[in-house]
Image 1 (cartoon, rainbow over the protein chains, first blue to last red):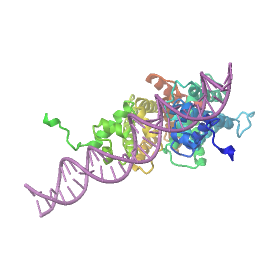
Image 2 (cartoon, chains in turn yellow, brown, red, cyan):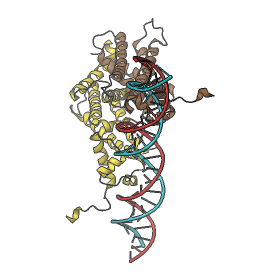
Image 3 (cartoon, chains in turn orange, brown, blue, cyan):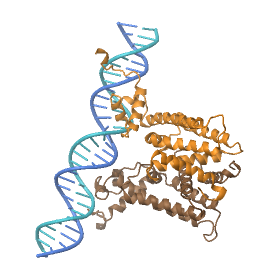
Image 4 (spheres, chains in turn green, cyan, brown, red):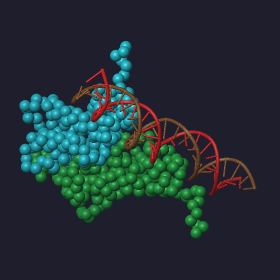
Amino acid sequence: MSTSVKPYHHGDLRAALLAAAIESLEAGEPFSLRAVARRAGVSPTAPYRHFADREALDSAVAIEGFRDLRADLEAALAGPTEPAAAAAPEEVITALGVAYVAFALRRPAVFRLMFGNECDQEDSERVHASEHLHQMLNQSIASLFPGANNSNLSIALWSVAHGLAFLHLDGKLRPQTSDDVAARVKSAVGALFALNNNTSGG
Amino acid sequence: MSTSVKPYHHGDLRAALLAAAIESLEAGEPFSLRAVARRAGVSPTAPYRHFADREALDSAVAIEGFRDLRADLEAALAGPTEPAAAAAPEEVITALGVAYVAFALRRPAVFRLMFGNECDQEDSERVHASEHLHQMLNQSIASLFPGANNSNLSIALWSVAHGLAFLHLDGKLRPQTSDDVAARVKSAVGALFALNNNTSGG
DNA sequence: GCGATATGTTTGCACTGCTTACATCAGCGT
DNA sequence: ACGCTGATGTAAGCAGTGCAAACATATCGC
């Protein structure tokens, strides 16, 4: 039993705080520095040894979120169809969009943290995490459309997914099952692909 | 001088609080109930006579925001080209998108209030304000593309504008002059219109 | 051993949203 | 003119927050 006496030092408090923060967020609880400290079983101001301020904790969580989102998107790219077989661009883009929106709805609080506030441009690590995502999207689009200038298209398609994610998150598009949402993303992408074809979305 | 002695009752405190709230937001100051009360020259708890809680004030501000945004979009519709002359769909959509993103960047805090949190579905007035906007977009798209089912297209295009707005707001697309942003919106819309044409955005 | 250093605690401040009890005023019936 | 009633604003106080400063404790290099 003597092994369970809590030592003065935690061991890896930084990681514990990060985990606690994500748990708090995912549980829908109010995400406060104090609450996170409580959950980690540590004094209210202990986190300041590891994070300069509240926003630094935010950023650390956001960075993890960006990593997870990238993983989801890469899984979607490699997913249903064999990666070797060149899938139709519309299918690939739909898969990316569905994965993007699904991530947002599955982990709404983290997604909001990642995107829902002006990111401190001084925080180079956080800025880099979001740029890394951006680059990944650019490359995906570039490989789908080996044309000249697809940075515009890349931004446009990112915006579609991002907008769909936030409109669903904020309840502007009505509550749906995740299947419904996926269908909606698919329809939206389809409508865009049909835009200049017959001037009428399916 | 006796005319300036502050009366016990304010007269129209609700309106004054709303105005103060918007001023606070637009000034980039932290938007708290107490700060709003202070700005209106009234005790910290006076607002509770007019707003059930903090969120009720939020909603009231958001509703004004929705009204303003609709006005901007309608101005964009009636704007550059004569409303009688049937403008090309791409131009109209670009104009709408530019107006939408411009609103978001001109009044970022209000825009975040309108969209950046789960809207209380119980607050029927607020829900209605956002649905009104949605309907207006639907009708615009419907009149541009008199096809069968354009609700998908409408959602897709709304998402593009919404995503562009938030990605700019959150610094995910780099800081730009408002002209740059407008050009970006235009390019994005152009890339989408060219999507299935030559599989390469201009 | 011993001192520097990293880590966690205590205390305290200013701020927040919100509740409860109280003060002031306006309008109305008598 | 008087006083009641309801609407509006105030005062005091609670729990919670982010944060800074001073203090305590454990770890590591010498």
